[in-house]
Length: 465
RNA sequence: GGUGCUGUACCCAAGUGGCCUAAGGGGGCGGUCUGCAAAACCGUUGUUCACCGGUUCGAAUCCGGUCGGCACCUCCA
Image 1 (cartoon, protein in one colour):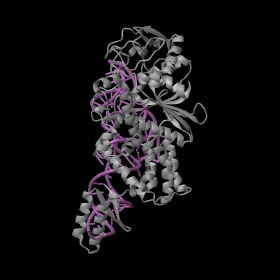
Image 2: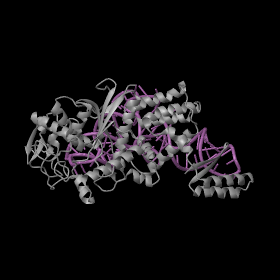
Image 3: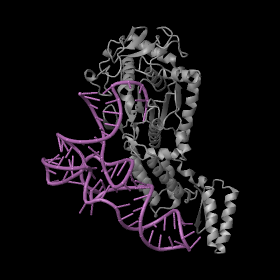
Image 4: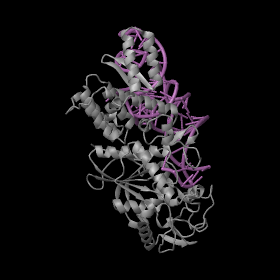
């Protein structure tokens, strides 16, 4: 299968050609664990998961590396604000290490519930300080750094291609328009590689370094760890669209200034999830999390389906109405699949193959999942295709979609309380007696217990509401 | 102030020059079926792609303008 990906670097659709034949090195920017991930964050992780699944589906062996930012994110300007981890720790009275641990666990709960495949390597920044120091030293040796006010800065003027990913026109940027410029900087866009001076007193997270005891700047971890695990050149680097102008721009500067060669071949970015009030963001205080959606009665996979309906490069408007419609769609789908039994066909007919072929075509074309879903629905609704073939095709499609489609029959057999079964049995008798009033009231009781009875030619079917 | 994206039916959302007299899902409506329901099935729900003008044999798709929405240029997926 030929894969086409939209590369942020070229702003074009490009044919995907890996660095080494059928192995793909994939690095995705992971969570900052000072707070819960909100559903906007999760949208990006779902996008990255479908990307990885698609690559595996297309026959590649994927090595996926994801960082955990458990140090170094700051509240203010990237270089001089308060550390977010420290802030949360101060507010909750816990240690920064506990905070990181707590939110990392919470993050992976969401991750698993969304049926996202775990990365081959999960790397916490705090466990890779040595690699970061080594990279900074390398930059220092290459003359790309300077020390001012106790901190080590990267000098962007030593890297002529600075800003190429974001297509920044440096002279047009109004640095300092919204924040105070750090007077230590030679160029306002310079950024810190290593801090020894914290404006906020002692931090828990400090390490010895050639420049003194301190902690790393927040861009260095991704460059250092990705090269450590994937080599100095690898295939794909992903993140949210917001990472383009600063974070990824700085990462490229560090990595390529150090090695002198191209670092990442394909850059891919997920667009934002929006609410009626605009972008969902942590700093605004109010945001939705997966556990909150579950409290509202949604399944994590309802949200996954919701995200699959829109292309990853377009902004997606979140609403509970939209989520409802995704839930209904997914439930309808699962119910249909539950009817197919559990026998898969060994091969697919030409007719069925048309759907899997178009599915592959869409999916490999820059991950056009919404179109791929229309192939899926076409398959499901085609009466000329046998249930067993449908199951085979669906399990093939689910390699990419990750909706646990083949779990449908299991869900059907979910234990039903004996109380409900008794009521249904009584109702069956009432029906035999043609006592419709009693039958209907018994059905109402079943409904109250959260179940629905459907009369089918094979007898009553009980479904959880 | 600069940069980029975007405006498609009741809702979400594909499609970016001719297979489009516009995918798919959700919702609504009518019907078949059913003791009644539910499910399923059939039909229906935009002659039109914010608006105006242009290019073209041909435009939702390209160009110009107008009016909206959003994001980025602080941290944020």
